[in-house]
Image 1: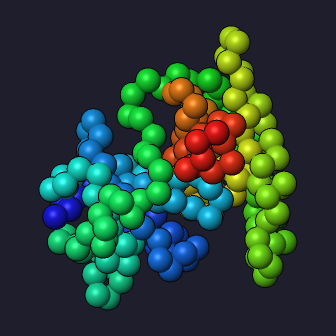
Image 2: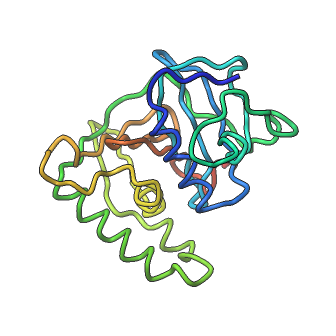
Length: 209
């Protein structure tokens, strides 16, 4: 059972966009301080997610994204059936909840440049097999804090754009800022409407290297 007391529209948007990218997308819902976090694997080898207030009967439960929707597809089903195989159907681990260190806050102008570049490239490759791996792995910005440097790859920008996490309204400066944080090998980028996660130095979320 999944009960959301707020943030339903955000989670509905996450599910809708996930299904637009992958009709067999799966959502994993984990308890986090202050509520729940819903994660989804993306075609760009990063996780995307949004937070909501609510409760879940089984922490870390995995669901087919389609099964989280009502039969009309316009709302959330409060009693979805877990995906066959449960947590075993979810490849890789979830990022940690704690231990995050803010590396850099990327200002609005740079954010808009990244998003515009991502949208342009997304259109360019929309009718092919998708962007080449070399493009996805290319670094678009480097963030530093002391001796720690984090590279933000184009794959993260593609995911932020695909899930609509950065508002199109540029009138409010706080809406157009990305917070880049790191915990161990995990990197998190927080945008106004959601976050993406990836593992630094790994080609995929399930890579052991």
